[in-house]
Image 1 (cartoon, rainbow, N blue to C red):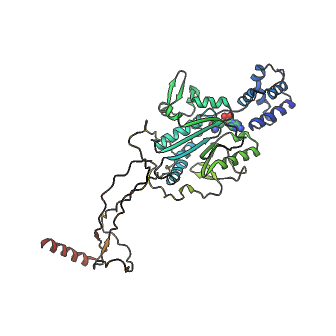
Image 2: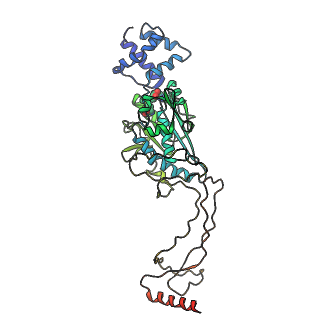
Image 3: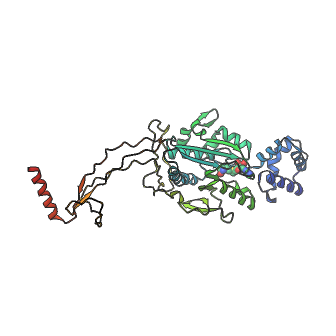
Length: 416
Ligand SMILES: C[S@@+](CC[C@H](N)C(=O)[O-])C[C@H]1O[C@@H](n2cnc3c(N)ncnc32)[C@H](O)[C@@H]1O
C-alpha cells in the first residue's frame, strides 16, 4: 500500500473538515494514514487518491460515515477529570434547582442537560449517576439528558450502555459499578433506571442547532480541541444560543474559552471553572431566591424511597446548598425562650386600639390561614394549630419594678 502524498493529504484533510469539522494539519499525516488504512483494504484502494474518489462517489453516505467513525477520537471515561462532576453536583445543580423550583412552584423541577459530544456514553451516564446521587428520589424532578455525537458507532454503543472490563475500570468506583450496573456476559450494562434518564442521537456540531430545544446545562468537553479557531467560536456561540440565560456550560479541563468567544463568562467554583452566557449577573441563579441556608436535600417523597442509598461524594469543598422550593406553609412564630428585646417603640397609630398601659406589652401577630398551591406534588407540611392573638408580655431588660408589679398582680389575681 502506498503512503499518502501531500496532494492526497490536502484533499482528504479538506474533505474530513467539511464533513465533521475535524481540522488536520500536515503534522497529522500519520493519523490519516493509520486511521484510514482499514478502509483502504476493505475497498481495495490502490492509493489514498483512489479512496478519496470512492468516498466522494458513494451516494449511499456509508463511506462518509465510515470516514467519520475512523477519524474521530472517541477517547472518554466515566467521571472524566472528576472535578466537573463535583462542580455539577455541588454548584451548578443546587443553583439550578433553586432557580427552577422558584419558577415552577409545586411542580416537578425541569432539568435539561445536553452532552454535546458524548462519545460512547460514559459522560452521559456519569451525569445521570451524579444527578441520582445528588437528588436521591427523582420524583420531584423532570430530568432529560440528551447525548449526541457525530459518530454513529459511538452513539449506538452509548445507547446500548454496555462496557467492557477495561472501560469500567477507568473512572468507576466499585461501589458505583455495583449500584448502577448489572453484570452481563463479558461486560457490565447500565441499569434501566439510569438508562431511562437519557436519549441518544447522532448530531454534527457543525450543523445549525435549530430544533435542538433549550438546555439548562451543556457539557461540551474535549471535542472543540479538534476544530479550527473559527469553528470553535461558532460552535460555542451556537451553544450560547440554546442555553437558558442562566444556564451553564462545562468544557474540558484543559480547554478555555478565553480568546475564543465573548458569548460566555467564566465562573469559578473551588478548583473548577464553568461558563455562563455573558451579560447575566454572576450567581444569578440566586436571583429571586433566598440565599440557601440548609444542606442540599430535596424533600423526599415518602411513597417511593430511593432505590439505593446515596453514596457520599468526594466533594470539592463544602457542598453548595440548594433550597427546593415548595409552596410555603407559614412558619409558626418562634417561642421566646428568654427575655425578648422588644421592637423599637413606634409612634402610636391612630387606627390601632389603645395599647395596654404597661410599656412592656407587645402583641403576637395572628397567623394567616395556610394555603397550598394547586397541583402540589410534595407532601404537605403538617399544619400546626394557629397561634391565637394573645397579647404577649415582654420585659425590658432592667425594668425590674414593672416586672415585680406584674408578678404581684398575677399572684393577687390567682389568690382571688
Ligand atoms: C474525545 S471524545 C470526548 C467525549 C466526552 N465528551 C469526554 O470528554 O470524555 C470527542 C467526541 O467528539 C465527537 N465529535 C467529533 N467531531 C464532532 C462533531 N463535528 N459533532 C459532534 N461530535 C463530534 C467524536 O466522535 C468523539 O466521540
